Figure 1 (cartoon, rainbow, N blue to C red):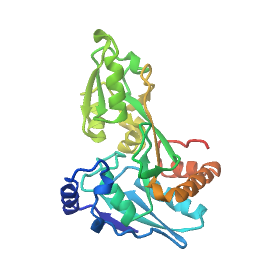
Figure 2: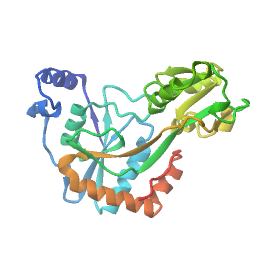
Figure 3: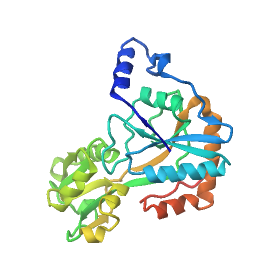
Figure 4: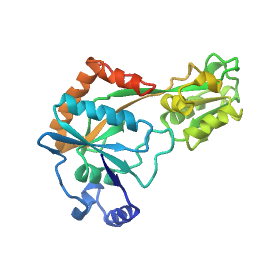
Length: 284
């Protein structure tokens, strides 16, 4: 396994280079940053993994199984970004330029890319999802709460700042009459959400389900916490796939087919169970 760290010097040089006017930030990357090495050669494929993401071990396992399906050897490159991924989180802390450089110099495919309905930059392409997760509402075990709607107006609901749950809940809560709204309290990371739920600062938290279970060591009962429906709010579902450069669209298609095999053969579900990830698959 290899390791690559994005340095502050690299970020400064990119920032200076991007000071020139150009509509496409990727086109403004100086050529001396790019090695243009092919990371798919002969019988080997190279995957990058966000080493600090909660899903890192799962992503490595999926990458290995995908290479097996394609009859290739796999090389895994752990990426350490300057802007760190918060504990118990999935965010990939790379901008377009950093991602482009990594996909040019270090690997052909980057695991754990969050799929979006808002579109992507035209230089990249995304595989079908290999994992689906969701946001849930967690409350303390002794609370007489069956769903979000049971919380009284003014109740304190915690969110991870700028997560899809936070953004969607803000819009939903704002659509309610003022006397029916809950009090949204955003926090910078999921660890603080868990702590504030336990100490009574919050009445409930909208949290990414894998973070909830890993944060409490997969034993919610021992932590005195339970999950209840988010009704009448619809908790977001988020899918993860693999990002590649657009020029590698044929490799992306091969990975799409390999992901379908992992799903159909039950390998993906087996990895989810084995590694204790709270999530599921997206049927072909």
